Length: 291
Ligand code: RIB
Image (cartoon, rainbow, N blue to C red; front, side, top):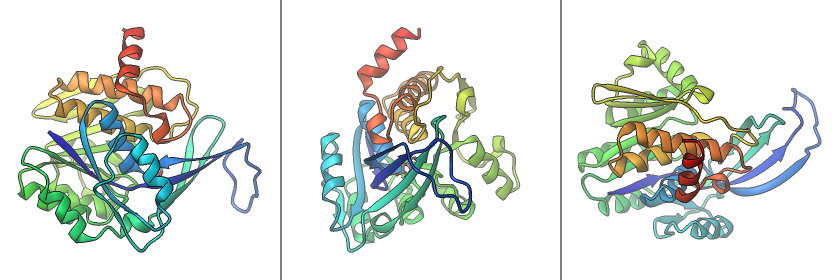
């Protein structure tokens, strides 16, 4: 089936730093690069590189030519990327010596996707397809509710985390992708435990401890693969996209998560967000090496 990803498209400005700046501190970077990113775009590319049939739905501004070219290079179609009167989304990303990051985003066009554009994308989707969202665009709740009503399976990654935004979309989703911190914060907000967040399926990444799936009455845990972290930006997106593509392809949950875990390990060992996402062949080789 097709994975329709209503997602952000960002130009990532990445500064490498010896350490994160303290309040009031001016810091010289040790490296600078511009790359394609956005949680939605990263997840769409990951699902596509995992072998999924993926459609990226989003928007850029009049300054969005560079981002369009980079998306086109990945093999994803530009058909569902609207042109709007807002600046193309961007992110300023600090990466420290340990590969950890701090990210500031400007939503711009990602928060100005016309409702008619989203409706047209939904009209082209078929029952059984996936509707995948994150918290970096407008129209998340409305489109997810409509997707569910049309018989699509719905997945949501509640990043960047906002408790109220997560609560609003929760009743309409089949699969929630979270990291441990997001799960804890959402559980506190809802007055439940992370284990009892009320969704049919929960996919929780645990950093170096791997990931756990809870759904269909089963709990499946996978270990993380060891990795030399160069840049963790987009690793969670890589995991989500790979996991969803694997589930969509009918892989057993443990196998879908194992492949997602391998993809994330490869991604953190490379700089950048979209650029760091491995291909299916690279994941196959990695898994053979780590059998
Ligand atoms: O998850 C990583 C992404 O977050 C970056 O690519 C950046 O664009 C922000 O959206």
